[in-house]
Image 1 (cartoon, rainbow, N blue to C red):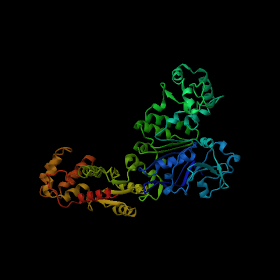
Image 2 (spheres, rainbow, N blue to C red; image 1 turned 30 degrees about the vertical axis):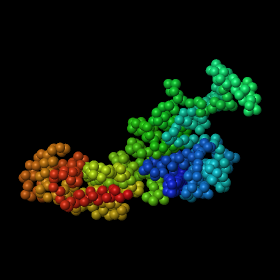
Image 3 (tube, one colour; image 1 turned 180 degrees about the vertical axis):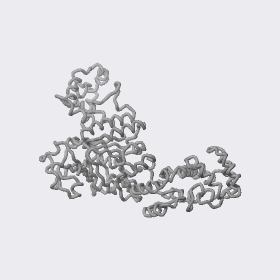
Image 4 (cartoon, helix red, strand yellow; image 1 turned 60 degrees about the horizontal axis):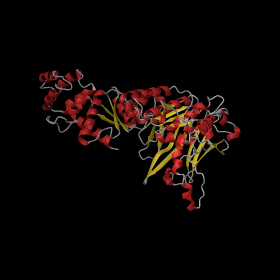
Length: 559
């Protein structure tokens, strides 16, 4: 069994907004294997950033993390904050018995009951914050004893979070990825020695001429201080070179003479991620919150291609980008799910069966509800409904957190709906009802999963249902519209004249054989007619299709 480099077990994070408690993470469980590239998706507020922050805090080399009473659940400071992270494949310097004592097996090995391999030691790190608001990091060994772990030792694990602010990643401070990337490659010296030499050089070379004006202004200062009982002779303005005043934060990367911190947000994040990628080759942990921020699509795609080649360490990122979902593999994707009442959180792996759906409809993975359309006709009708909602009710499906996808015909819409339901998406199916083969089986599967079905009458497709719904006087104006833009099919008016008396039985078939609606524009056109976008055309009081769209609208707007 492979070790898990990072493992979450019952991770909780809550914070308070007024009288409302927000569960940013509630009982999160998942693990990341060595050499694994992981993409975390989910709607805003699901807990993606919280997961990355929790990993970063637990492994951070910083000692001055800021906490407040608001970070405690219900602001109850008597209930300490705890973050536990299990880390394996560690530097040898962290595995010495005299440092932390006998280490534990990984949580997964412990839970599975498998025999523990002494060569696979795991560092179980705990970050604990009590009412003092002072963070304390410890290692829990195999005896249950907690041993303090220093910032220096935590830095050896090499976890770095790339978030909105990454300016310090371009300096040589001990907490920066640049420091870790370069310190082991220096021969015969160290970054600290370079800083000391620079400081001594500055002490010997600085000029006093620029300070003369200040000294002239303040030359009477000792006299002015005498009334205070202060005797200050020979006051001078000089540089205050404290011990090691020149530190790692003073040295940073520049381009064309300008510090990289002055670059644009996207460029800075990309440089930072490049540094992280180089570090991951040595087994470090890379954490990236919303990887797509400030980056063009081609750069996003290229970045994911590079991260997919990760063989050591871990790369864990969150995203709202469909480009990331298309480029990543299904087994690299995890969805963070928060229950409707906010009481539970889950991290669910995305099935490889979702590959086709994910690559053709990646936008849907960021929605709360998904309408699985059988094919292009139904997809076009949904586009019309979306436009109608925007024009008539100032709502769009996107604003409601609803997405609709083209399932490509056949029975795939039921398979897509099932797989999406397993990922805790609320799903429904919008489809024909003309093929009785396997229909009952599909409907039973949908019922078992509590998936709503929006179907035409038995034996009807969208097109035949349309002719079933509308009376004779509606058809001729419809054909006149059909003869114009956007479809330009004047021949159907001629067909209508031939079958005027029996159009209900013969004319629809002429429409179907020419497949006028078997595309998205055709579906959109049909949807506009169903929704009565053309006010001059008489509209029937009852329409199966109109009722279906009304039900889909109600399903979409019901939070």
